[in-house]
Amino acid sequence: MSSRPDLVAGVRVKVPLIIAIPIGALVVIGGAAYGFSRILLALEPEAATVVALMMAVNILIACGVVAYKPRLDAVTLAELVVVMTYPIVIGIVLAQIGFGGAEAGDTTATARAAGQSLAASGVAFDTKELDFTAGEASVLPFNNEDSVAHNFSIYEDDSATKDLFKGQEVPGGSSTDYDIPALKAGEYYFHCDLHPTSMEGTVVVK
Image (tube, rainbow, N blue to C red; front, side):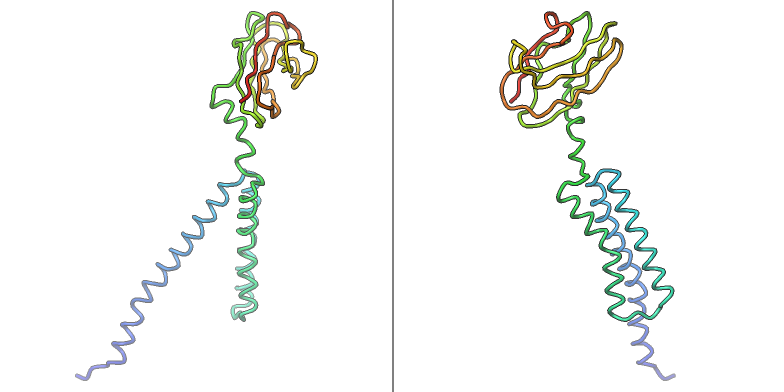
């Protein structure tokens, strides 16, 4: 029985390719999906949704072009690659410049995670001192447990002539989040404008 060296060689070449091509495709797809997910996680949910939808639409367009025109020349193929990848580039740019990034919402999370909050009960605040980071805006959750309205305002000193922040009045039994602007390092005075003598304290910014 004569051997077929050419057939054996052909089998030796085809068998690895049958295994290598699907594995290679899975590795490439998995790597691309993981990298794209990192980009989306660096953006706010709204921005990530827009970028993901753009990517999905571009992939559908590219698949439609391939189905309509199975034989693609080099120029058309390059154009498809650009169309499919430009949402990724946009996402990377947005993540790098911080547009729609998670940092935009960090002030509320930081303030609450650090336990920075204020409450009113018995016509008195529950603390005499509040601490803020210099040069950073923050959010101060305020809970009014009394039956009368209160507010929270920050002044340069206890003369209360120049306000740095003036909060809205909060009805009894209600709560709100005060958006505190960035303040320079130093010590300031705060009180309730409705009950300044019994509800006061110091703001420390450092």
